[in-house]
Length: 398
Image (cartoon, rainbow, N blue to C red; front, side, top):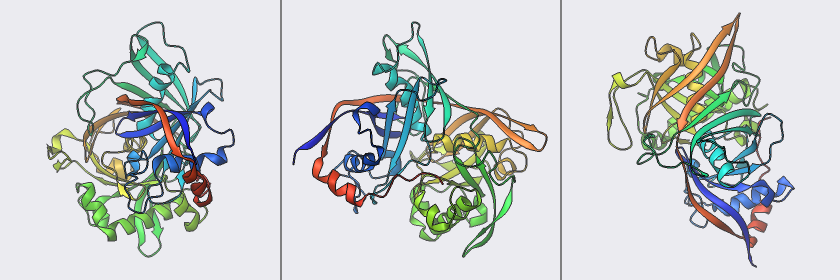
């Protein structure tokens, strides 16, 4: 059986990689998409390596972005993010990938999907269909193409690149009922098999449940491999994630929550403290305002998801939240320095209180992006047929 051929671009966006496709090149029936994406990435792979596809064996390297014409008048482009699971025949569209969001604007202009700007500065309004939110992408041009070279260093990515400014407008309620889905800044979450755990559940660009790392007996500075290897801890974190999913109204039951893998994320939070990075460098406590280890699709993220960092920046400004309580005193201003396994990133957010309600107006950060390969993606037609039989439906938030 001949292989399927798809026009494709392989891109890095922030600290993630993804296959980027045009919507017009895919079947109009989106029920057929999961089997194509699984085969393209090399999933499911019981060995966890995705050697027969474009995936890299971990969640940040097993992603697909689909770009198409806008479906709303205030956007230039539609962007749908698909998280492809590594070991299972399933995909997840319940949330956005902020890292890959940085590649969408440059892709749209470089591909001619929208006109290049007349000047040197590009502004692309992106409608993320996963969350229904608008992201404003700002970047410079290098002639008729988006600039790639620059002096902006992004922790977790070697070298430097041209910065992409991402403004997430009105980020509250991206995957749940609102900024504070339960109406509470902090509460005791009853977790089956564990008991009550003090958490803050916040949804700004991404639903996240924040926990004081010390509550679970960790420092919050452990490297991802240490956290991944602690199966007891990982099981507790997954139990907390399922309980939070139900409490936040994302899923009606633990069984349903287990199928929605992308959200909510679970974040272990600690105050400023010296820590080693994946590169072996030491981050001084004075160089950060808060420390995070975020769990993504069953693994500790090697950096911090963009949308997760935006949510953390917003949570830091909500008085009394777990993040606000642990962050450096006075750090809950417009900017906050977030230490993670790859280094320190600075994120800005604007949050205000209107009566008893907290409102997140926007959150901003910078990424870099680069087109790595362009051409034709070859997909085994036989594997698409097999994947279609195995694949679970596209998973979305309830």
